[in-house]
Amino acid sequence: MAPAANRPLVMGILNVTPDSFADGGRYFDLPAAVARGRQMAEEGADVVDVGGESTRPGAEPVPEDEELRRVLPVVEALAPAVRVSIDTTKPRVARRAVAAGASLVNDVSGDLWPVAAETGAGWVSMHRRGTPKTMQSLTAYEDVVAEVRARVLAGALQARRAGVAEVWVDPGIGFAKTAAQNVALLAALPELAEAARAVGARVLVGTSRKSFLGRYGVPPGAGPLGVSDRLEGSLATAVWAMAAGAAMVRVHDVGHTVRAVTLVAGGPRKFER
Image: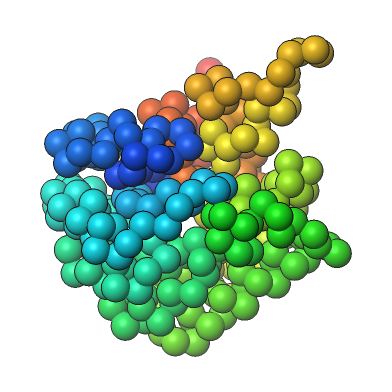
């Protein structure tokens, strides 16, 4: 799928959960979820990413049938109006969601490329260690940039060889990473984007409202910023990611980010008089 109007894409986050870190519970019921998904489409989202299981650090797993109950009606309702991705690690949930209208599998486990090959959906090769319960204890790397790059590119190559036409790589910001490691991965995005292109993939980055953003740009003596105060950091890192070669960013604040994308895509010449 080519970027809309030759610009990076914006993926809107729709958490159909009671416990997601940024907006858990706000869109847990079907009418609220569908209304939010349609609102994001109106704000310019190219993709709405529907997830029924929180992946925040420490989150409890959700039974498969409950995850299906949460996501399938939302996918079915939104698919006629906007492109939908399914945020899941479970093969059956991914298959059922694609049958309901989703066309992209956003897979934090990095293991569902066979489902994408089977169904014809696109697939995201993301880096993560462990599970939400254990991942923040698994942040020891010899070279975080090299190890993350190798893992996501290996997944991308597997998927491409299996016939998946649309493959994305995601460095997994905040998943088994320290704040400093997140920043190192963001700094290395130009190299990741180049390597992804070489294997027929593109880069997706999600930094939106994540905790490491609350540690930067804070006045001396002030504590970390809370979730609701991380908009500026979210926009700054999204703009950096796009300028560094990311072809899609995953965000909570769709309208703000779409306006930022327009500026990035237009470049300085657009504003000459």
